[in-house]
Amino acid sequence: MLSIRLRRVGSTKRPFYRVVVADSRWWRDGRFLETLGHYDPRQDAKGVKIDKDRAQHWINRGARPSETVRSLLKART
Image (cartoon, rainbow, N blue to C red; front, top):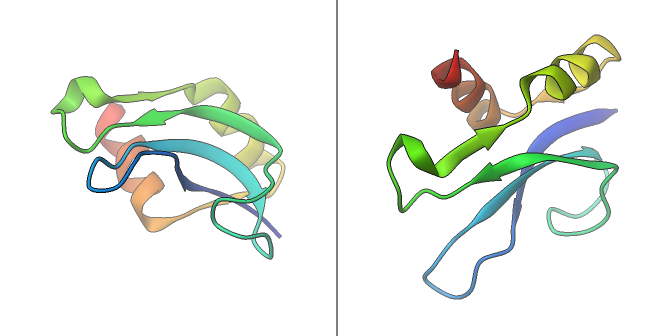
């Protein structure tokens, strides 16, 4: 099953995440199909950028967003 989730790419104690579409069986920082945006938790609302059209495209194709990504998408609307 496909999931829309966060992929950590930041260094130690400086987290930075990419919002990606990946198979739920793949590792958190492993393979992915498409990057939808990014999330920087150290910034306020400016740290979130997600392509809503592509996210909706993947949700329509059966991908399920994680709890965190779901709250990020809801906050951006």
